[in-house]
Length: 334
Image 1 (cartoon, rainbow, N blue to C red):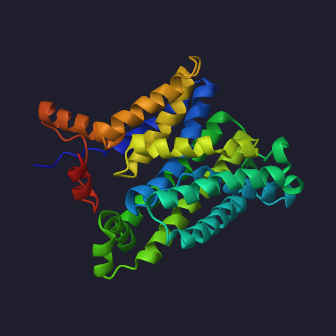
Image 2 (cartoon, rainbow, N blue to C red; image 1 turned 180 degrees about the horizontal axis):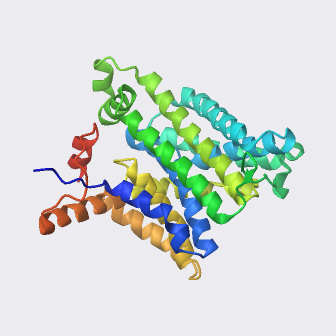
């Protein structure tokens, strides 16, 4: 008897997202989902850094800003096309992440948190004061992305562009975690002393985690700059860094999947409750409290519990039983 095939839940989410512009015609909702796709790239990179290598970053919006300004300046000042500017902004931001990761080797816990906090404060100030290059508070107006003669100048086209790149980067992250590098990062998170005893170069993989996380933020920064069409130093402030940190904690640090859920949460909640004064901040605070004390696996854990309920009631597994290096770790956290 042939076995039935069930799609993994993240794949179902992606398939549904591809049909959103065909069903929903409101440009504002499509724009919000487009920003969610960009934030999910940042979330995936931050989960690789925090959830797997065990290093915290409270100034991650600075990496987003660096990527955005590199891409914007390359396209405006030099006339470079969007695609090479996207690649160069990602590589440039990755280099900055590498440079930040080197001194971070000597720091742990709250010392590392304070250091990255300082980085998150310094970068927007540099972007603000370097007016000859960045135009300061006046900001920059990056051009819309192009593919040949086609211009991504509608909300739907930008949405598909951001979604496709986000899917590619999420796929790359999943595959990386199944490789030797991914297993080394997981070992660092569980017990760095045991990992060192097993022959894992702790310094190498910690710097690598910072570099990859910054690379992902650089890609997101480039997409943000050219999708929104305007950037200024105020767009990459410390509050956005706190939002990114809340995003991955609420979404779930145990898997790449949590970065996607967290991005949807931090973008859609302010849009839904923004008319009520301070309501988004209250919701964020309550959710963080619940996650830390009651649901340490975040939205990801809730999703897994719902999947288990469907299995118990329907007798069917809604997901493909794919074995990964994360299976034991995630099930142990539930």
